[in-house]
Length: 398
Image (tube, rainbow, N blue to C red):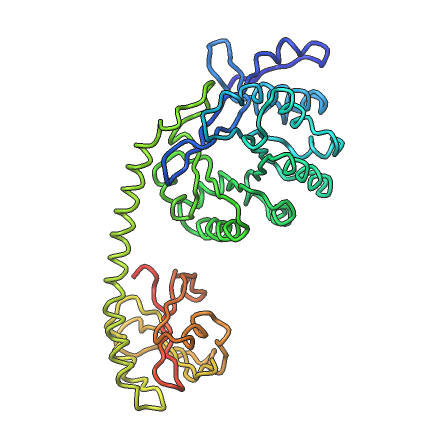
């Protein structure tokens, strides 16, 4: 990318005029329609190519005051275009909190811009980037924006744990997941679990989740699995000088949704089939134990030996105290490996245990990573009788 070299603040105005906002569409996955456009600073080079001007805001050769002036200049150019927005859409404006906390709380330049250009504040989203700055001043500025009718978004959530306290304090309407973490999460592993946990947090906060930087179908599908309502990225469009038509990507999104549905349906059918033999074995074990007050370990071990994916089993009493040793799947042959480490431990605090006594005879837990085997697994808890619970750890992919 060709960098832009700016001169001192006395001579920059003519050069700055070449910087202009381009608009990247934000697509709603349920309808396929464009519901918003993020304004991004672009510089049109000598070849007529639009390249990002974002590096200017981190250039140590440009003074803080000039960066602030440039930021406001681009923002005002974007605000001037806001009245051209298609119906039922919003414009997202990026603002660094350091500019907000350096501003008096009773005079926010962006609100002045909206008033000056007669823009309805409800059609504007202020996206806070790089959540730094003094929190109290930031909260006061956010309060003024909200009172004016502007919505608040937080960008790059997940890039740093220090953001969590600011999300709690600012209560954003929209949360954008960190692009790098999201793309890494689409590859699986711990990053996938981290993204899923962040999405749960966002959903519980009441914020709308947006995944940006979506470049591939796999990333789009991962966003759907995470529960994102909106997507943004090169899979649909780069930023353009004019607003994309609201229905430009509807067919593309519809086809992506259809492929996602088919893939998830097939996966669910395979998962159900993989657990079918386990559930049949468990029902037989339950029938056998109805009249017993003890666990018939021999029967259980024989019944589960033929079930692929079983990692271990053990039994607990109705208070959650583990009655038996852990029986780990044999590496070869039919002799289960015994481990007495956890005998006497109490598991009543685990959701899959206490849910069992809320009226279910079998409860399958959420997926988690087994510490001993590093295998994604689930725990099936089974009520054998009034006093005994059988717990079976089974591979989640089986």
